[in-house]
Length: 335
Ligand SMILES: *Cc1c(COP(=O)(O)O)cnc(C)c1O
Image: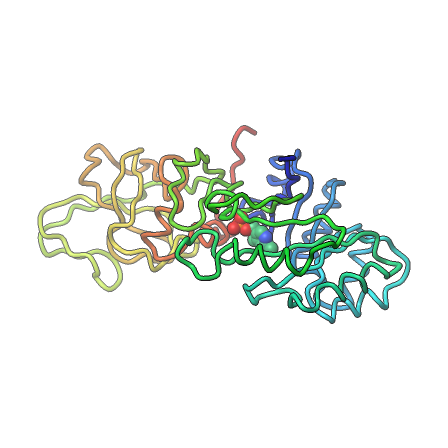
């Protein structure tokens, strides 16, 4: 099977990792894909000369100028976008026709795909028409709408159309039971070391790109009956030491993470206690008797997979990555 080319997905500020970092890390990708048009322009201004794909296409007419001037490839998923292209002036823009193969989010219904394909092909502003679709359940083998079913619909309605195809997010690449052949793939979260679904990152030997770190800024000795933090959600049953970490929901740590969510203190695995507040959270120091003010704390990343923390907090690694707040100081590894 020929190798696929890769759109490295960098939407949401490269899943919270920063576009500048993504630009360096994904130097060898064939293209970068995102949804934010101003950020696509920023990528060009930072020097990215290879293809850029707008995965939701233009949002309104005012976006056309950026597409034309910055050579952005654009998804076409609705009639409004077809109309914008039909009225557009001189340019030669590659477009990507999105097929709704069952997810019912974006895309033309299979019955309309052929027509729209030929309409786009005939437009002077369009230099090339590619095809794409998106899988809803690559991480869930029990789903009724399987990738195989979506693939069949996609192939049926595009049979005979001469076009490159892009498929497969991280879940489809890592977890799908059948090989989904195509010209281009579109991985996102796995490039940052995250695993879709409830998969184990170790299984794929993915390394976390992001580690969220802080330190202990206080230590408290509790007696039986003493409680911790707002709402006094955690109550000590025996004498114990707890640490207070300078990280809270205003840093992007999930407020709904419950007691028991894993955290590393000085590299030792322990747990969150009580309610996360805006600037602080508390940890159990029982397994780390040597911990003191200044001890390092890992909220996720090296030694603690983000997906494990996310699962404990009832969310997914994606949301945690994207939510790291601007006030968190960024350090780039190896620089
Ligand atoms: C976000 C996105 C991807 C990447 O998804 P991951 O699950 O992060 O791999 C691929 N394609 C489209 C259309 C997307 O919106």
